[in-house]
Length: 212
Image 1 (tube, rainbow, N blue to C red):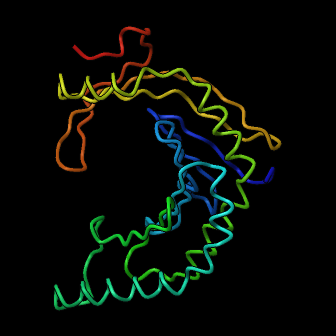
Image 2 (cartoon, rainbow, N blue to C red):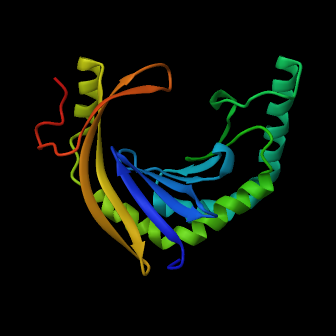
């Protein structure tokens, strides 16, 4: 674990755990501090989601037993897409994700996913960052944030999202060290999944993070 190059970015009510690998940054996991959920991320947008960090290892241990069911669902969705478009050559969108609930847990993959490779990848990534993930959660839980309801109310009243960036933590000799760097970015929706950045306040006071 201590040999990997790892950072955790705390933005809003979540954190992204990033590993530097093969000269690029790879997202390994995401923590949600509103619901408590944790995502283990794979390539191509697939992920495993569990209600809390302590649920992650037990579910990943059981995941190989679900491989056949996942394979069948992937093949079924691929057939449906090919029938609908008349071609297997198409761009896979977010709406094409195959999400499968297993009790309170969820597995999401895109059509074409090699299920065995996917399971192996998320499991291996978890092994690499298991202890880092725990530290990342502890740091994130200690960050003071405005109530989530206040954030939602602000969007409804102004149409502007004020997203707070709290800083980053870096892995040094097996320990995450947090460097606070509080900033607020103001964004306006520019489509279903796109946002327009209006401004960034790099030195806001506690009360200045709310848009007029």
